[in-house]
Length: 291
Image (cartoon, rainbow, N blue to C red; front, top):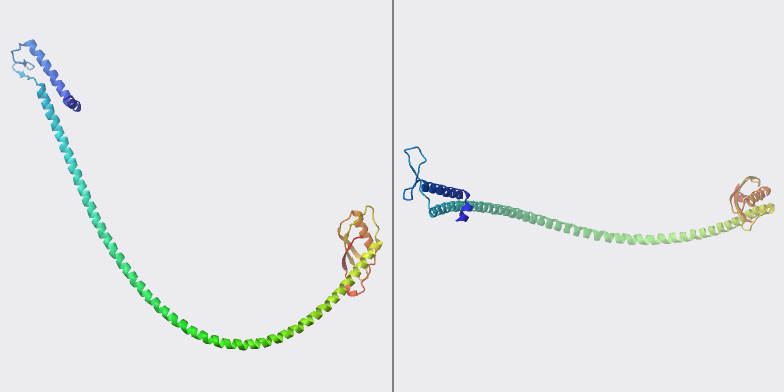
């Protein structure tokens, strides 16, 4: 019972209030009247009588239980209505899902039929393209066969022409070989003559440069601190009769005195010797002076 009262605080307050009122009325009854006198409390103007009836605790508990049961039945009824509502909503949701599934299947069937139609069209188009391709391949094969026959005929004629050309070419090559041998012989002879002339020219040029170097050597004065191994590359510009117009040392490995002594010796050797063959003369000559 106390758990029910804690669960329903308003009912508990009412119960407490009724009990308090019961005890108040009971005390007033003992004060004004004897126990044999019915309980009467005058709370109204004279002439009006209000009767108060004591509430039995068991009756109160019964009423509280009835009220609790009534509230519980209301809650159960509300819960049942909620369950019915949820069930109805679930069924409606299932119905919507069923309809959506049916629509999806119908849509899938339409898509399948459309895909099958397109696939059939594609197969027919592919078959037509394949037949066209086969026809083109047959025509191409016939064309290639015709070309092959023409090629073989042309090859036969070309072979005959090549054989004739080969014979003519061999004759021409033989003539060219003989002509080439004759020219090669002439070139070898000319090269030999040119080589002999070049060797003679080189010897004469070497003799000419040696004569110039010897003339400079005769005029050279050994400078102080000279060391073996000194050498200089001399550039000379001269007149046709050997007179010097310019002397320049392009390189010199010795000291400054050695370099000046070489330049002085070149100038002292003026006029420079001339070659035995005038064709060998050059206005500009270079030689290495190494004592």
